[in-house]
Structures are given as C-alpha cells and as structure tokens.
Amino acid sequence: MATPLTCSWSGVFPAATTQFDAALDLDLPATRAVQAALIQDGVHGLVVLGTVGENNSLSPEEKRAVLRAAVETAGGKVPIITGVSELTTANAVAYARDAERIGVDGLMLLPAMVYVPTAAELEHHFRTVAQSTSLPIMLYNNPPAYRVNIDLGTLQRLAEQPNIVALKESAPDSRRFTDIFNALGDRFVLFAGLDDVAFEGFCLGARGWVSGLTNAFPKESLLLYEALKRGDLEKARNIYRWFMPLLHLDAEHDLVQTIKLAEQIMGRGSERVRPPRLPLTAERRGAVTALVNKAAAARPAA
Image (cartoon, rainbow, N blue to C red; front, side):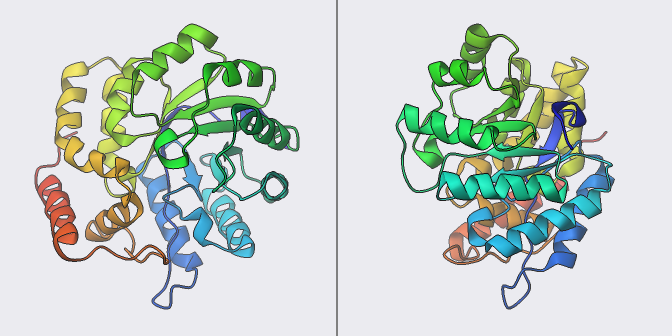
C-alpha cells in the first residue's frame, strides 16, 4: 500500500491530457501514448484526470480505466497522481479508495465541484477524503476556477492530517507561497499550479510544478526546472521569457483547448475535447497556433 514516501513530490509533473477518438469516445491507446512520451522525455511524475485531463467530462468507469492505463504505462518509473474532482464528498471518497486499489501513488484533491463551500465545509470535505485512504494527498487551491480559497487557518487545521503532504497553489498572487511558509514552515510541499507563476513559485520555495504546457514542450519545462534547481537564474529567466506567451494560456478559461491544440501542433496528441468544450476556431485558434509556432521556431538550447 502506498505511503507518502513512495512519491518524490518534487520536479515537473505535467497535467496529462485525456485523448478521445473521432467519435469522442475515450481513446486509451492514444492516452497511454501521451503518458509514455512524457515519461520518456524525463518528467518527474504525471498528474492524470486533473482539469487538463478533463476529469469531469468522463464517466466513473472511464476514469478508472484511465487510472489503470496510467499505472500500467508508468510501470513504477514515475509516480502517478490522480485528480479527485467529484460533486459530493461520498463520491470523492469512493474514487479515492478505487484509485488506491488501482495502484496510483497519490491524490490531488479538489473541492467538491459546483457547490461553493464555507471554510468549515471545505475542511470537512478534505479531511473526510484524507481519512478514507492511506494515499498521500496534494490539496489543490485554485480560487479563480473553484471560487473558494483554502485560507491559512484551514491549512493549519489540516496540518493535523498526516497524509495531506502537499499543496498545489494556483492563486495568481505569488505572495501566497511566502504567506504559507511563514504560517506553516515546511509542513506542506508546495507546487506551483499556474504555469505563468512557475519561476516565482520555485524562487519562493516551491519544490514542484504541476504544468499544462509541459504537454507540448516537456524538454523546455525540464530545462527551466533544472536551471532554477542549480541556481542559474540567467538561463532560467531566458527560458521563462521565451515560454511566457504560452504559459499565460494556462490561466485562461479555455486552457484545456489551447493546451490540447498546442499538443497537436507539436505532434504529441489530439486537440479533441468533449462538449461542452469545443475545439478552438477562428481568431482564437489562429492566435494560439501562431504562439505555438513562434515558440517552436525559437526553442532555447539545452
């Protein structure tokens, strides 16, 4: 059974896409190919069935199938973290238990979908799911997307739960990293959760990065991480400046479509998404295509 020690909780963890065929049925071979390519490129772990993985567009059976495929594809080479994104706490508990049985290495736990909770309700949701599993858990804080912020008091109380070990911080204000350290020290491993604050997050003490655009540009994402890790700020700044027009896409409402289009342009996957999402069209498609092509033509050297 997995324990917090089975996952490194550091490095670049792409939020992997889920692939669909022309009929928009789940395409497991293509999904596994995307996962395998990222692992081959050297990422430090995979987050599957997060926002970019279109968690809430899949049936319960499809979610479990994607998890089994990811565990088999990774073969223990890198940790597999799954998003837990459900409408109710009971469904989140059931999913967490199934994920543990399937063999994933950790959970990325979101607030319950649709309903906007009070701080007490949010804490209850997180604590109830955590107590239902022995898997290590990364909480996911994304106030713009989920309309609720995990405040410092809630984090301090949840620090009592031993298998809550990490926090994916996607608030756009990078001051949160310092506020969390000041309040809790190193109790939680921090991950940058927005692509366009990754540099700031690492400089302020984050150990990991859950990234969307790594799906299209994994080698450059790893170059950025490695430069920051060894303290080469000049090289890291140059990579970040090159990358930033694309990284901004991760903070937009259509991030799934833009990331999957970038992935397709770079020959790494398909842009197909399930409704209510639709593939990009017209000016937006042209603008994103131009950004990707411009970046691909001027990729930083290793």
